[in-house]
Length: 480
Picture 1: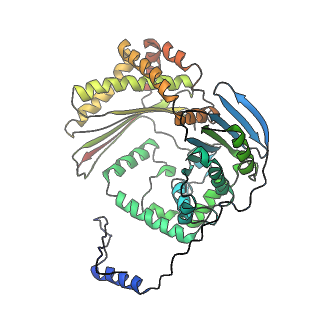
Picture 2 (picture 1 turned 90 degrees about the horizontal axis):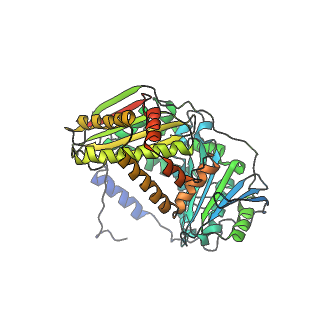
Picture 3 (picture 1 turned 180 degrees about the vertical axis):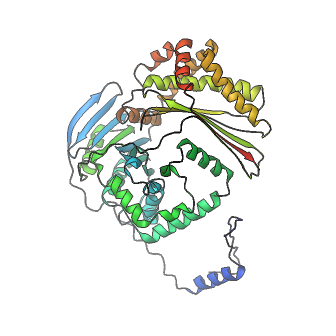
């Protein structure tokens, strides 16, 4: 290797405790590798298969149709369930999602921290006998994006792929259950990357803002402490393997759904070969109350943080009890859309306070049905307090007087138009099927009629019911 035409660049945070290597140290490293004998590259991947020996296929023991969703429902000989919905939305798209009940709720307090990074570390490991690098070579030319996650109430495997790569995708899923790869050297490499990432993040005001929101929203629960480079010390190689085994060693609790370009006959064969063949333990995991609840009352966390951009970031949350139903979700969507219209007028246009006010309205089923309406925006520090007041005042107007007929009509027209667009997306169908089969929520049947039935009185009554409970959380981050 030539040494007369090279540039060495080192970047790192300007932070106490971080030492940048000296020129002499860099030269010593270069001299060391130049003196090493480097063997020529040997390709050990050509001709290899993901699964060398085909599994013994299981069986599809029951098939039924769901006319509401246009899906086929399968029960496999090992107890697993499969749902599939063929669509012609995109010729080269297939979405696969597997989910099983339990998730983080079944982990111990000191194990939950692993759940937040499990997908990242498993990706670093590769699969079976293949390192991450070797796996990438083996999958060259294929379009497969697979992610594993442990959510609060479910364990998930998400895959986005092409129909032509269906078999390879199912082979990978099979291996993640039967033959995950664990390599301590790769773990150390991954941990070094994570430490560097979180050390850099410590100086970011956005992390301080989002971490404060998380802590406030969960009432300082130990299970939701945001990750830092110091907390990484609580993660060990053995703990990662243990958590993964707990949540992904028994696929019998899983349902897999397929949405996109599907050949049913081909899919059935692949399912029997790679899913129905999986060994199961017949566990019946279900979500349990993990003790994470929002605090009661009106709470405020107003703090300062050094920021290169002189802006104030505002987060306001209204939360409380509700029903977990399609009607509640629709009423929540109406409230969100109406307030969005009001804030565009009162905050952006009248006050020139911010370009965008982001509003979300979500309903969770577990541990108890609970709604959360979040309002988030950045603004000029001099305008922040006035704009916070406007946010609350618009909510109070909606509670006291209900929506205007004009705003409600705009919301209804938007919902019907947007639903027509949503139904052209496989990802939307993926979410609809998850709601229906995992959460027992039908957000499809009679939707347009329900939208048309919305009136000023019904939305007013619902706004009074949910937004008058007195549970409000404010997080305001001002520049130092």
